[in-house]
Length: 407
Image 1 (cartoon, rainbow, N blue to C red):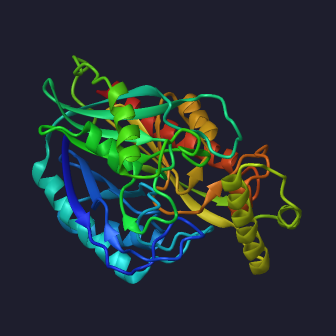
Image 2: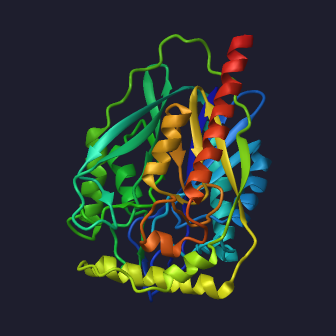
C-alpha cells in the first residue's frame, strides 16, 4: 500500500459570515491561524482512497459530492470529506438536518482539496499503518454537566510508517474544538490547529480530525479563551503521545478496497418531542449552560414550525486500511455511542462530521439538553447509527480477513 499526504490553505474573505455560534454577530475580520485542507491518499494498483479533512464547521453532502467528482481527475477512486468542526471558520451551511453550502465557500473548498490531493498523490510511497489510543486527562469533559468529574479523553492515532520511520499521524480527537469564544471574529483551526502544531515535526506530517465529540468540550477544563490556551491544550495531547513500534512481519498490507457504505433513515422529531421542547428548561446556575439551553430551545421551535414528516437519509461508511478500520458518521455522535461502535466492531477509529452534516444524534436516554433540543431527529437515532456503523465496520474488516485467508 502507498500512502501520500498533501495540504493546502483554505482562503477566507473578510466580512463573510462565520459559523458555529448562534449568538455570533460579526463576520470574518482577520486570520489568527490559516485554515487548512489535508488530503491523505491510500493506494495500490487497483484502488485509491482519499481522506479529506478540512478546517470548517461542517461539510454538507452537496460539497462532498463536488469534492469527490473533482478528485476523480487525479485518480482518486473513493473519497471521504470530514470537517474538524472548528467554530472559528466561515459559515458552511451548518444547520440541523443539513443545509446548502454557500457557493463561494464550496468553490474554495473544492479547489483547495484538489490542490492538496495532487500533492498527496505525488508524495505516495510504500507505508504501513498502526492504530493506537492515548488517554488524555485534563483536556475536556461532558460540557452540559455542572461540576463534572475529571475525565480521561480517548484520543486515537493512526501512525504512518515507512520502514522504521514515522512519517505521518492521523489524530482523532473526540472533543469540540471550541476554545475561542463567540466574540472571536478571527478565523482559526482552534484546538485542532493546536494539536497539529504540537505534534508536527520537520520529517512528519500531522492531520487532526474530530471524532464522537457531540457532548464533549473544553468548557470545564480550559483556563482561557485565546491562542495560549489553544496551544496549552494542544501540547497536553502531544505530551501523552508515544509513537508505536514499527510494524514487524505479518506479510504485506492488504489491498486497498472501496469503503463499505450503508444508507440509514432516521425519523425526524415526533410531535411529543417537539412539545417537550416548548416546556420551561431546568433551572441551572451556570450562565453559559443556561444561555446555550435557551439557544437550543429556539432551534427546536424553528424545527417545530417546519413540521417535517419525511425521514432523513444519511450515509454511514467504513473503510479498512492495512488492518485499521475507520468509520465515518455524518453528524455529532455522543462519545459513549462512538465508544459503543469501537467496542462492538473491534477497536475501530470513529470519525464524526464526515460525508455530510445532520446534526446531533441523541441516544434514547439522553436527558434534555442543548443537543436534544437542537437535534433534528428522534431520540434513539444515535443507537440506530451505532448499529449501522457496526455492521459496516464488520463487513469492511471481514472483506480484509477473507482476502488474507484466500491468499
